[in-house]
Length: 104
Image 1 (tube, rainbow, N blue to C red):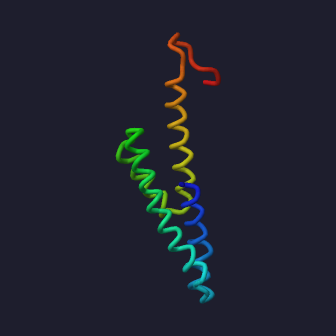
Image 2 (spheres, one colour; image 1 turned 180 degrees about the vertical axis):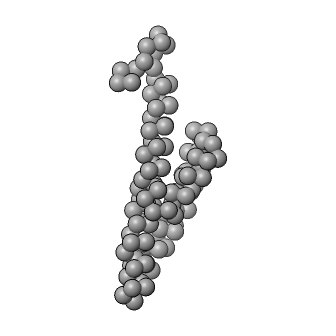
Image 3 (cartoon, helix red, strand yellow; image 1 turned 135 degrees about the vertical axis):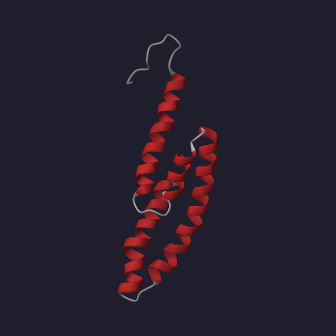
């Protein structure tokens, strides 16, 4: 969801808005804007659910929320959240012998 919302925001900010105000062609902004808005609401619901399940702190949740309206932030936040979730999952999968899982 973060990649889709982030890509939609980039298209809106760097293509739609310049075309609307620079060239007087609002078509891209009129199409991408509502789609981004709807997908951002879906992304928020998904982010809230993930934050609840993974017990994120308020600052981590705020970063996820901001990722939908700050260009390029979605990609950074998605990378960090995915890494954190993967690390926690791998940590749960380690054998109880005290030896780290392979690749760690």
